[in-house]
Length: 112
Image (cartoon, rainbow, N blue to C red; front, side):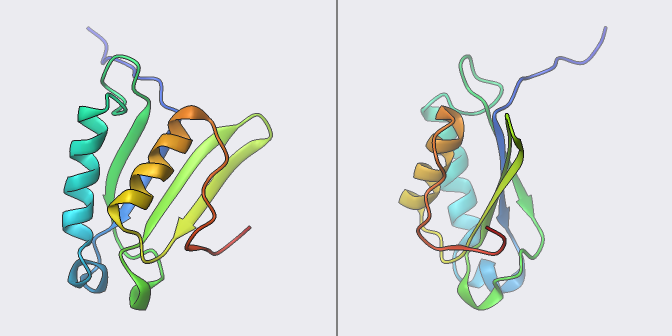
């Protein structure tokens, strides 16, 4: 039997480096995971499409928690890098990815 394939619209990574953890990234990850499950946005839920992963350093150590998002668009791979992310912002980012909407620009850093 082959593994089950889940279609996804995007992938969110939450930094778990020591500086981000000191600023609450472990709690942010847990809260976002619970939100994705409750809102049926998690990739394995019916209608869901978001993958969420803990990651190593995302490069904004003094401004954590950091979050990075990748998603495939008709014109190629889109990425968004965020610093000083709180739960409401993370939830807005996840919803935008799921809906295929424009990524929020608040607290974005890195490549445009």
